[in-house]
Image (cartoon, rainbow, N blue to C red; front, side, top):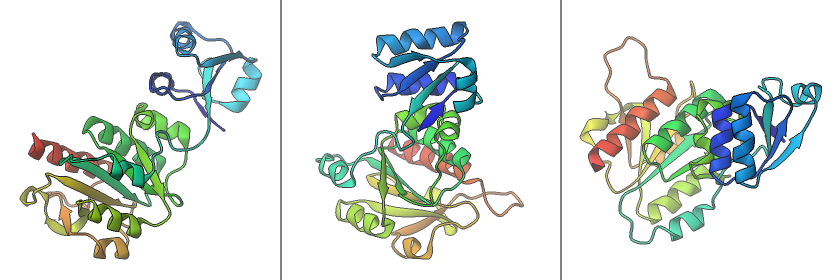
Length: 237
């Protein structure tokens, strides 16, 4: 089990229709509003002692939402592809071993803002910490569809068969502003400090980079994600 304590994160999960149990100790006015929201959305509310809630969720502010510690809105890739029908503009983000939950949450927030249709991760060696992810994503984790896979290379082949062009974010790639990112597009973002794995790079249709004037060698992966997704949105507008 995992426990969400951020007010906004709890609200967004409840609004998204996801289940959970709201644990209540001594809620203030803001937390009382969430209790009312839970009742309206048929979320079970349980009264607990302050000591018990502090033990389960040390960062609580009088309430905590108990959830299963797994990805929200998890979908099967096969179902996602089969439901695309004739859609031309589809955007997928693939995360290759993003291990920092703060980066993962920030990436999900950008994915929500820029209309990403699916986020794909490996089902091991990726960020796992529901509370941090939910807080840093401002609750976006409850809204962005996600898919876990054991084999990202095979996933790329399935996406290509479905008409996707695969672009890997890499310092040595081509200027992103020269690439046509419309249509069915998948963007791969590599892990912190490691980048995209060799096998996935070899399966990309092209590598792209964000031109910069700084002295550091690269942008933080979550910042780079936001810039790339904005460019995709700009081209499609």
